[in-house]
Amino acid sequence: MNQPTPRVDPALAAGNRRRLAAYDARHFLWQLDGGVATITLARPERKNPLTFDSYAELRELFGQLKYAEDVHAIVLTGSGGNFCSGGDVHEIIGPLVRLAAPELLMFTRMTGDVVKAMRACPQPIVAAVDGVCAGAGAILAMASDLRFGTARSKTAFLFNRVGLAGCDMGACAMLPRIIGQGRASELLYLGRSMSGDDGAAWGFFNRLCEPDHLLGEAQALAAEIAAGPSFANGITKTMLHQEWAMTIEQAIEAEAQAQAICMLTGDFRRAYEAFVAKQRPVFEGN
Image 1 (tube, rainbow, N blue to C red):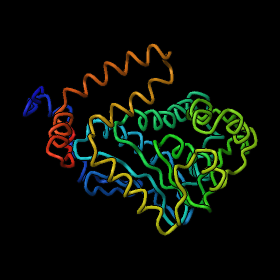
Image 2 (cartoon, rainbow, N blue to C red):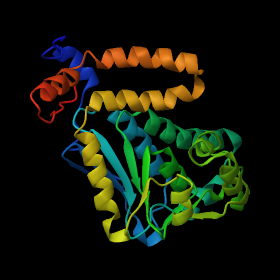
Image 3 (cartoon, one colour):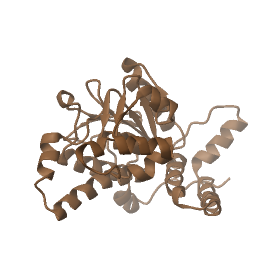
């Protein structure tokens, strides 16, 4: 077995590794426990809408998570019995109707960059969706890796209800891959709500939970992921995303290269040694 390098050069680590336990969130809540970060959208009086500021902070935070060594899985949720009502009508929608084209493109690129950053961060993201999950909120759930919902979840890609196209923040690329072309087309053309039961039957939700247990179950799943081989999990997430644009032949070769890299990790060796000793492996993420 190849032995892993015992340490990373400090100069290299200084620019590429950081700890986010003390991250001071300004526009949502942040908690880190046992390698699981919980991001809570916390404007319950308005069903947790997004603002220009919260979009920008989410973009920056998910970008930083690419370098975080103390975060191994993420839970994204909302407070007060709802997930996210989308862009704030007064703080985003109102100002948008007064902006010129260059500023509008600045905004739409910023919102798209949130999804790009979510997909590029190596940590799997579990969305815990209760109640209203609309517009950009539905996009945040869609861009997560796994989704837990409740029977009272109402997920709506309601862009056409406000005179816009359904092709927002990657919806036309990602949603059909999750629930199928026909069902995605129905939601994007009509802007109607997808119930929790429909979401579970269509594969949007991995599981439906009781509202009081939703966050706990999502955090428990995230903790199970965080206890696994985090480097390898990051490779899995990367390949799940990148292989959308590959042929089968390209995907097989890319996976061969990715898996060979994972075989160099200490976690691969630890799993083998634990198997030989008839023990459960304790992964360290390297």
